Length: 192
Image (cartoon, rainbow, N blue to C red; front, side, top):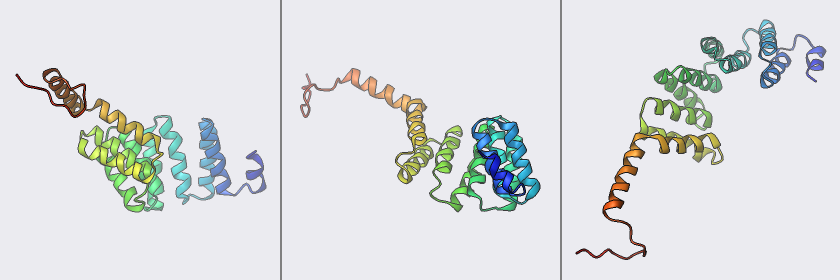
């Protein structure tokens, strides 16, 4: 299906870029890299092609190469929010959370409604145990897009795994053992 697109004009960088994206979605990464490289031979200043080349590198856990591609994209277009977001995600994978947060903040300065960056910033903050800020990021994501499943999942995961939540549950359980809730709403327990 993509063969005719690049066959019509073999010097169309966007067609090679799109073919690379399709192949990357099919997890045919080596073929995708060849397409991105061809697009970049035609137009070495195509920030989108550099960004797209970095995404499958990230999937292959070739993180430093992915960062280098994002850096190339950002050298061409410093206002490319998706490249900032992807670089932040890769840095988070490397547990370089402070650097990741800087990238997410750059992406959000460009696009304040970029849910991907808000959600992943929450994950990076969680990695730094900055828990009061974590939920704010997930909530911001969900205010922008209430159907963003990853943010719902991350928020629930945070609440069920955070040490603060475990402390609250232990305290509530201890309190319940001392003063069980009344079976009748609104009633008070008589004291002896």
